[in-house]
Length: 238
Image (cartoon, rainbow, N blue to C red):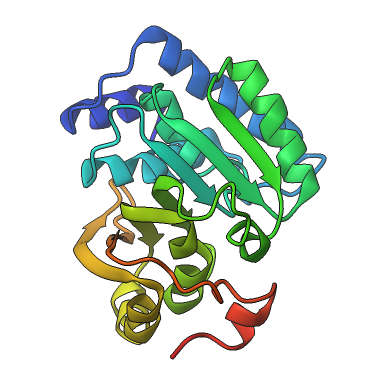
């Protein structure tokens, strides 16, 4: 997917990019490839792949959920900024917080945000388990996103404690989403979430399967969650 196809495809979904936004995506690509030579950010470095499998894939969440307005969004384990930075470029009013456990990625994100001229963004070097216990952030976000971080039962424990009551957790998944969701029922119940919507679709051109799972935060998360770093992955709630 080249930049022209990228813009045309987004337009079909009602997302119109202006010249500034198109330039931001171009610069994002250049900085990503440049920094990828120093630190491991992505296995994809061909422009068409980055535009399709990172930029377009990230923005696909907006085909199924309305990001317009001053929503607060926390992106857990965003790596090189996916999905929240492409969403921020498309929806500049978003207030974005990214938490990632690798310091080098946070350094990259700070450089990227400055180069792209992004405002209302904050990056934290922390484990999601610790971050979710922090009173400043716990149950404070309208939207919490995660893309390809962990299986659903684990991811729910990392993300739902950060979602405020009435907010949503958006999990961006691949082909195994349905099976993962079936196994995460107990975790969602315990953590205060309920499935509000499930969207399945294929990426253009390569036809790989994608899913967006919308989890509504109905009840407060019990104080004991998230458990200490590493525990959710080793002993998922079942």
